[in-house]
Structures are given as structure tokens and as C-alpha cells.
Length: 108
Image (cartoon, rainbow, N blue to C red; front, side):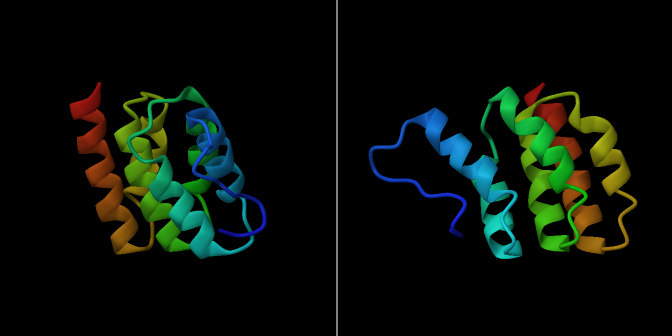
């Protein structure tokens, strides 16, 4: 990861989420993308607002991963962002947003 986030074998679950949230703001798009992947399927209310911001990232791959992570979160706050992402100019983002909506429906 970039300089904003590090994790060790002795890092607690809360520390891992905190590190991933810092990484979601990294200057490097690949780091942000991997952070969004790492936040997928985590049931923690702290992840929603940062993912709602990430789904509007300048990098399409970050938006894709944020869409999946939001859907997997099971949080109803993700609905409007996923609906908007289904109109993204990038077809892969639209596809992942639709998949996120399916995941959201399954996890609620």
C-alpha cells in the first residue's frame, strides 16, 4: 500500500478497517482500488461514507470496486449511489453497480 496505510500480522479488525479507509484516500489509484476491494463484505458502518465518496472517484476501477463494496455492505445508504453509478459513462462501472444492487438485495 501507499504511505497512508500499513497493516501488520498483529493488526486488529478495527485497525485493518482504519488502514483500508486511509488507503481509500491514497494518491495512487491502484492503492484506492485495492482498499475498496479490502472493504468488500465488511459489515462496519464506518465504511459507507468513504465508499460513497469512492464511487465518484476519477478512476473507473476504483468506482467499480466501490460499487461492489457498497452492494456487499448491505447498507441501504448505498442505493442512491449505486443507482447513479448505473448511469456512469464507463460500462464496467455500470455493470458493477448493477451487481452491487443485486448484492445489496441479497444482503439486506
